[in-house]
Length: 324
Image 1 (cartoon, rainbow, N blue to C red):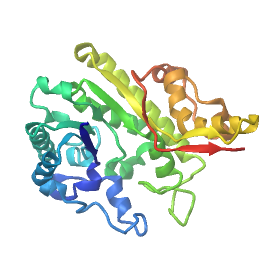
Image 2: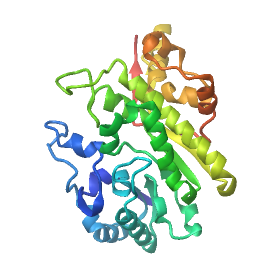
Image 3: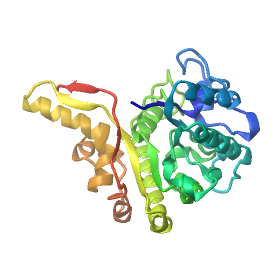
Image 4: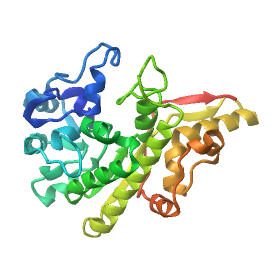
């Protein structure tokens, strides 16, 4: 059976300030005391930015046939915004990396946008892209609050996707938006680490910010899909969608209250993002719990959001038993 490996750029690359790379929110977050398990950060990691040729030789030696890796947004667009420059050195690095994988008979599955990495249209069919996997450039967070700023982040994100749209026929707009919103802006355990818990963060409001961020992620996704479908899909014939995450929930027993508890847990874990995109509305239970803390879509926005995924992408890691 073919074997594949999966990694993320921040976990392995290191060389955080080399060749024009900018900072991501994870660079700053990981350097705060007690934010990582062992106190380490991504400055060196496993040093793959320097040792990538040796890494690929090892992959081939171990018989790996597919390699899913991510591209660091700040290595490609150091400041991240729609008026900020692209970094040629970053593009060259990933271009050389992909060429080397192919020459070793390893299929790349890329998590992050690729820019001008592809050398020929013939290579397009081998790739899918994930356009956002948590590594927001720190400059955008500092400039206007990142995912908390609806007007700015949607413009920058859509522009960002436009840079890469013509180079791949299948794309995932955002990976695991629940993690971005809840872990980054609610619990404060992922970058940028915002939370109402002042033992974790000096700023943040866990009662409002996760729902604002989640709402803005959905709208950024939908606007990127609109751009792709109108400008690129007619020629590429490709697909575009989102990848969600969530633990499955099973009722502890068949009692009505526990069956309901399982559904309520699913509403917040999966339905939060899946229901607007596939059904056209937020789960009713979320509105009951959140009240006016839950942002509302305009009629025009909801028309954009509903149906904005050509497939259903899902990462799930465990199943929980739910009881009232």
